[in-house]
Image 1 (cartoon, one colour):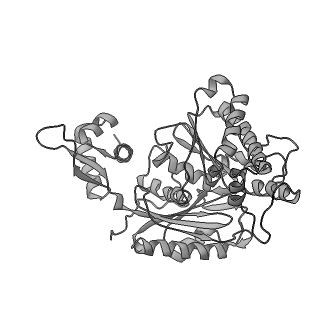
Image 2 (spheres, one colour):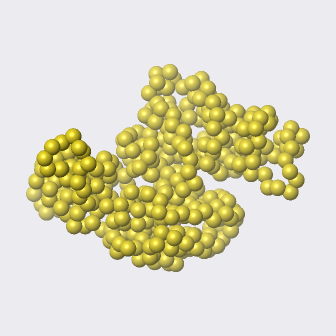
Image 3 (cartoon, one colour):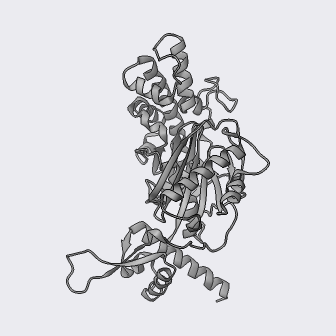
Length: 417
């Protein structure tokens, strides 16, 4: 067998073992051999390499049911690598430092109005947030293996640049390059919904599935698609624009210029705009001089303001129509609803489920599970961190496509504290 083929097979075997350890948490060499189909000798040799590389570690089994010598278990070395995830939103920048298991070690949210600022302004804020998080995690920048940035818009993750985002003005220098220059750390850029989807595939609700969808509800409506274990990005890395699928012809005006898009009814912007119209029509009251936020609108709707409850009901109905179409196109095992918008709760999701049942083929409806994720403020940044983590694990099968904006070769793990 040619050397190149042997090297590829060994890389595949190494990935399968590392990924299996990640999935099971703690596992013995015998179990690894049974699950991966590799010989015990191969498992022994490869796990010895992974231990030398500091990626995994041995620990004694806690199983008290077995007599005699305790079996040694293998687990990921969580502190083998540290990465940074960043999420850029309309009103905030979120940063988080995580370990190799995507556990958040330090995080910060910077409230700021990003819209229409320069890309250099955004880079300055991101740099401050990253440095703050690294310091709070008691790490040094040299210990960070990479930075992942998730932003809304049309992002070519392979080339590392954004064709368009509603957030900031496009500059001569790309955002990823600006961050890399400031911190001298490998930086990758990805659509924010894809980043969250990757986190679900590696550590979340999609961990055990090869076919699932993630729909993110926030300032916009995004989507991530996993089919047969692959994150689907579309031509040039631009695809899955569920938020701009028209479900109500000649309906409400959307930011993209069309009418009747899902986003025109479901996004934070659309909910606030509809609430503002209800306010102007005297259907509810709000203190003068205070900014009208989606949090305030959601709270008032939960408190029983009928006009606002109708805004969420209509949003849920429209969202359900769109999801019904996705179910019938993709036939996913699971659809995960994620993002800050899940805080709407039953206001939106009861009418959504009614709409899904109304517009979905019954046979397909029986095979799909709708999961509404309990949202945490660090989830966006944690998803961005997974952009870098997947490069560390590096699948030669390309089941999870490498996402770093520029190939960096073998990952060099930084010194531990």
